[in-house]
Figure 1 (cartoon, helix red, strand yellow):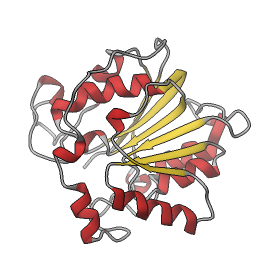
Figure 2 (cartoon, rainbow, N blue to C red):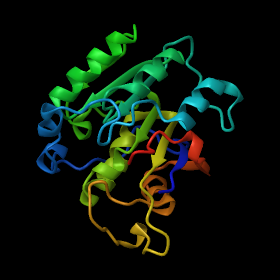
Figure 3 (cartoon, rainbow, N blue to C red):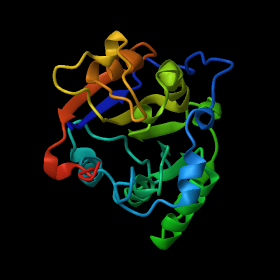
Length: 234
């Protein structure tokens, strides 16, 4: 499987994007709570056991990265990881100077993430709730989506983009790990070929179409080298 990391900047977003007034919750679609209650060990199933190395490298490079990630403004810039799982990326963001937050639809998963955050000596905020019902406040300077979009039902994709636009600050950045990608030769999901899932296959064009339609501008896209992927077991 190929993995690609893309960065989008909220260049044209002002005051958020209209959001649907009603939608299916993630929990109505997949039994995430049941999965976490049955137990998911580090490195098991969809748990990659670490922050995506390519994203961690961006955080390490800071302002030297191309493109650079948003300034932490003295540690006050807020960052969000939706579907944060055990919280690896949340901890990495805090260590990079962000006021990091994670959200999980599963209360059990949120509890596991809180335990992990505490075990790392971090203080990031982990909440249990529905990403789609977060307040539209345009307050996050950085959002990291790593295999969150692919876990949603295809009918939720436009709401995903609208919600991202409502949460991120003007000129804030959304970094997304586009994975899994459609198999070589398979129809592009951007053309409506849904396939089976979750995880549902994605493509760079699909993600770009979703986000540019709500005011984002793509500023980078690169294929993640094999040695910078956290998902060898997937």
